[in-house]
Image 1: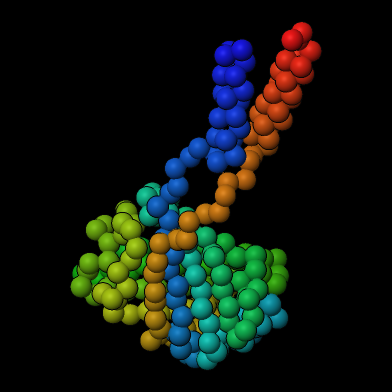
Image 2 (image 1 turned 120 degrees about the vertical axis):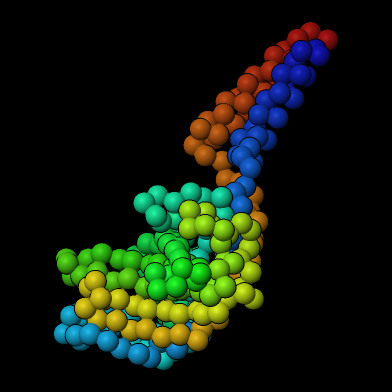
Length: 227
């Protein structure tokens, strides 16, 4: 009887691990950039298609807010750190960056190596046309050089936005043939909110179903034994 009870307890523990996923959470932070005065233009307007024009219209001197999430322990690939677009709203449009991908790039400014620069970048290829490309750069700058220890590692933990000297933005159309840009923005940072309850993966579901089946079979055998 003890063996059967231990077997049931072991299956219950296994099912509990399957539900929680059993993995430690990454050190994820979020950065929100807003209030950049995107009102300056440069380049050839004829290079813009209708989809790109709609995006520019939402940002031209309109209120917006863009939030990125990233793992502070991540390592760069090709000079780019992985990032996720959490939300973006411009001119009341919450789907303004639908279909865009994100990454983070950081460097010391070429004209002044004491400046630390982080670009939070959104990009989309074939945006409104097979050869069309749109990129949005949301940039934070610390002119004192304390934003990150090196360009090869993200700032550990939540970024101290109090040390920032510039918060800028730029939308580039077709490799810079046309740009909408501005500055004077604000940035806020926080640790990402903790995730909700884990959702079992397919393999975990299989383990749970097998465990329930085995537990049912044991209970049926116990009921069948003579008193």
